[in-house]
Image (cartoon, rainbow, N blue to C red; front, side, top):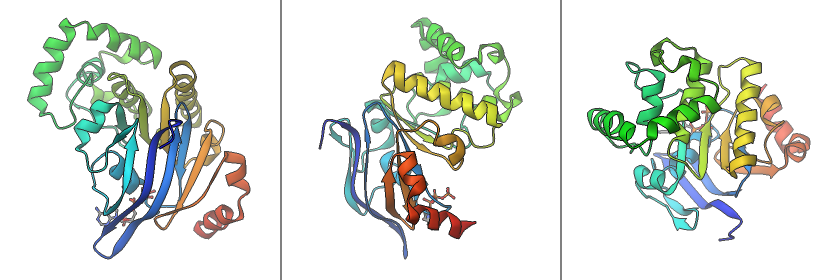
Length: 255
Ligand SMILES: Nc1ncnc2c1ncn2[C@@H]1O[C@H](COP(=O)(O)OP(=O)(O)OP(=O)(O)O)[C@@H](O)[C@H]1O
């Protein structure tokens, strides 16, 4: 594997009964880039995220992250290697404040029980100075003013920012972002993408981003993979992909 790539997916196949969700998928993410994964509904994007994050074992093929073969590795191990995923619908403890939610994310084990994470996170981690880090992260994402609000009482856009803050608390090397701009207004969507660009430029963070809002996405990403019916059918810069007749055909077919 080339050192240039932090993530490599090689000839991955994943089926569910008779459905071929991923068919010989080959793709990669170069270090320090924002790379997009687009495609119509049902094309296989979420399944590919699940294979990369260790939720599904592929029937065939390999996944490499930062020099490790992570094929079939449990999600918490992949997380600890520095590959962190955020979800389209943010996952957080509804009965806790924004601050507590960000605090509990630090080096959190995705397989950890609710009670265990509460005890370990709120008491021990606050002592270890992680509280400062949570505050800095909330400042960076401009959500410090809602730190004391219950996470159930904030807007959908704010939830997206809290989800991102939680993702950053473990100092990941790479983020898998599932529709970071879904359901938020265009101004905030641009702010979220500007923030992601800042992470790339200032921290060298690598990202793979699923996003349906191509008008916004294409202003920010370096490279794009297009999926259709479980296969990568096109790739290139946003300009190349938008002019690719195969891609135009796929999206027109969806219209
Ligand atoms: N757990 C599952 N069991 C059976 N079929 C599944 C499962 N997960 C995904 N599929 C099927 O695999 C195919 C790819 O689905 P996937 O959710 O990966 O697409 P997607 O590109 O993420 O779609 P969307 O943009 O709507 O989220 C679809 O035909 C879907 O019905």
